[in-house]
Image 1 (cartoon, rainbow, N blue to C red):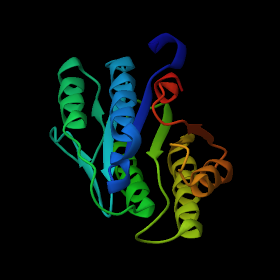
Image 2 (cartoon, rainbow, N blue to C red; image 1 turned 180 degrees about the vertical axis):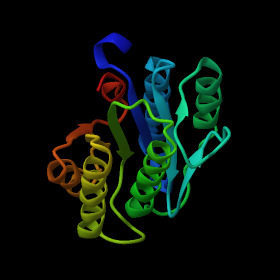
Image 3 (cartoon, rainbow, N blue to C red; image 1 turned 60 degrees about the vertical axis):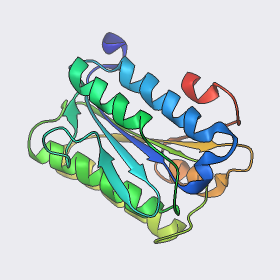
Image 4 (tube, helix red, strand yellow; image 1 turned 90 degrees about the horizontal axis):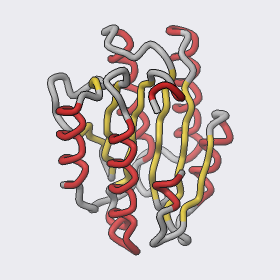
Length: 196
């Protein structure tokens, strides 16, 4: 895995709003996140952002505003933190992306980065119910990916996943399309997310 993808900075952004309790979506997101963590090597850096009405970085290891090295011990702490997530609250995409890009920016400025690829994986089942709306979210993502490219010569790929047949695909698809990212719809009660 490490040889095929190279070193990378990975930020997993997981929706933990109340609707994620429906149709097994929280379990699906947890399973996918832990599967991703398991594939990382010590050459990679990782952060987990959980969001509902607000966004927080989970798995507090050292400096909780930066990505951490994906050592066996750090991965264990992150997986434990993922498994403790519970669904509750509203859905604020803007806060989630702001926290994710803040962690990336801090990591690169502190020279604690992998120095290579950046991937942001955004998992949600819903539509924005709190905070700035779609246009502002897309503007934030575009501006921050452009800033990473301009300031640090780093390419960022945004992967968005719409969880469930009732998920609002509009914003997640728009974010991916506007940033040359990749959008994937995922059915309820499936392992499609883990495969993707």
